[in-house]
Image 1 (cartoon, rainbow, N blue to C red):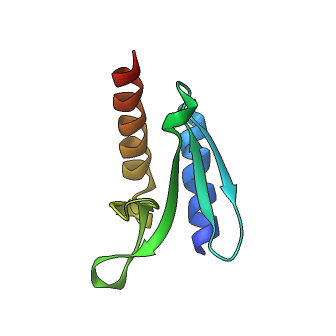
Image 2 (cartoon, one colour):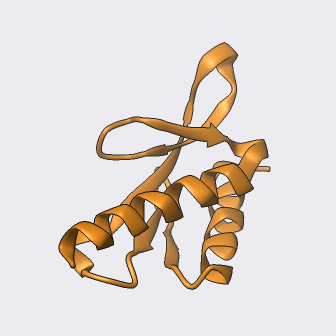
Length: 91
């Protein structure tokens, strides 16, 4: 699967949780994750090469690795957790 396909898959999984997500394709595709709460907490997820040359989901702004692309459910849960924590901080 390509980076774009991995991001589309993660986007579908996030949408199933009620999190808005859309792929922005371009030279380097990214997944815009839209927090159901305050829009200032929206995030951008990309794919980058991580340990041992494997492809990982990552936060684009910080480069923090979320999970290998083969573990999309783990990445989904981590994204949802961060959004939930950030949303709670705004309450």
